[in-house]
Amino acid sequence: MKASTASQQAQRSQQNMADFWNARQKAVSTEKELAGVMFDYARAVACKIAEDDPAHPIWRDLATLMSGWATQNQRHIP
Image (tube, rainbow, N blue to C red; front, side):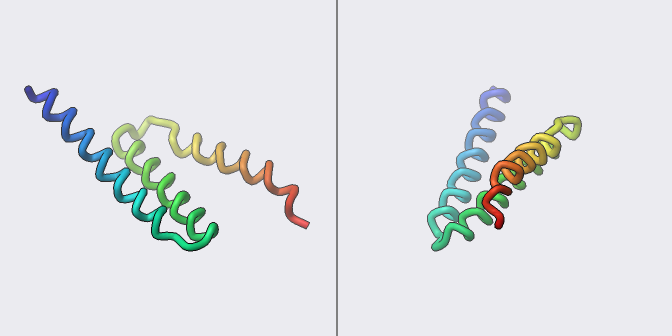
């Protein structure tokens, strides 16, 4: 019973988080605002993962992803 309750709480927490971030995404009016919301979302997910498992390499994973994106898009800078 306890495992089922914990599972239900985890699912509810995930749904609340999804609802929150979906609403923030829908509320933006520019692409720049959307990028800001998605950056905040990624950071919130990383914080939660690191809180639950301090040994998880989530910050390195996020930094690697962002570095790759920046390197790929740097060619657009005059």
